[in-house]
Length: 424
Image 1: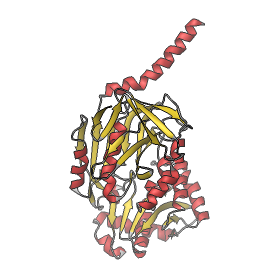
Image 2: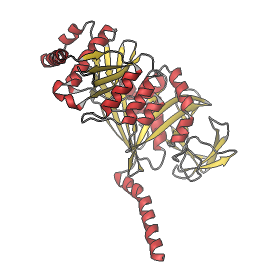
Image 3: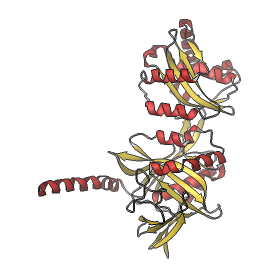
């Protein structure tokens, strides 16, 4: 039996190994051909795990890489499973929910399976890497693959710009799990480009993560931008305002005072009927930064099951909703997921008014920081805590390979159509 080392991933060539399916107990027999290309064969009933078809059904011609990896400090063998079929992902939803609870991350909406699935746009396809030890799920990593004209391009991204919404694992295992997932994804022949964004809490994490890739032949680049999306609060609203610049402090006070004189009111905790009415109204009257109705309603559904989650709103003197914000309180940190503003009240600076009301209410509720999911506006972003984020880029092939692989299937179909017309 021969094996080629790809970092800590070992692709066995010209041999077969079998593993137990983590759902149904049936066995998948994988034959890894020269160059790391894998084919799936059936033994007992078909598997619905780890396949690349859109609905998760078994297809012998589909790629399904499940290499065995050695994690060094973690005892025992860990298997990595790459899943791109949405139906196969749905089958694993209970396992992911169990892992979230086990790792204490069940209150993080950005790691909820439903949020991950709904947060992928038409230009991206979801991808999940699962790490198993025996029959136990030890890590789950969310990623997305860029699509062009509906075709997967081989460009995969882990984590958002702030290094969040990616890793479900115990705290001491996150960095290693992320590195191993990247290596498994890059073991798939068609994937040539992977971007990883991770929050850095300790420079030793950079050394640990980078060290795993030292022996590979990947082209690696690293930048460490300072990201700002966590706003510290204070014991009182006045003491918080004192930490801001004079211009920002003035805006938070003046615009709010103006709308209060017009009869506008703030609703700190909206009921379900008010939320439904406000979302329906504001979705139709959004500003230039629009969110899809599907995404907003999925966030609403997810937040309904999160402890400490609530919607707050601002309405004018005609009882028309002009702004809503939603998120959840976890300990003394408020995670702000949504803010939706009416585009007809730009002169009243609705966004500034909402944040003035909301921050004062959060401070009175005991919150000491706001984590703006997906980033913060420039108004308050300059006062957020600067944090180091590591942005890695791994390449194993050049862009010309991408072009050839992306257009080759389309060219073959076109050639078949042309030939069939000629033969008619």
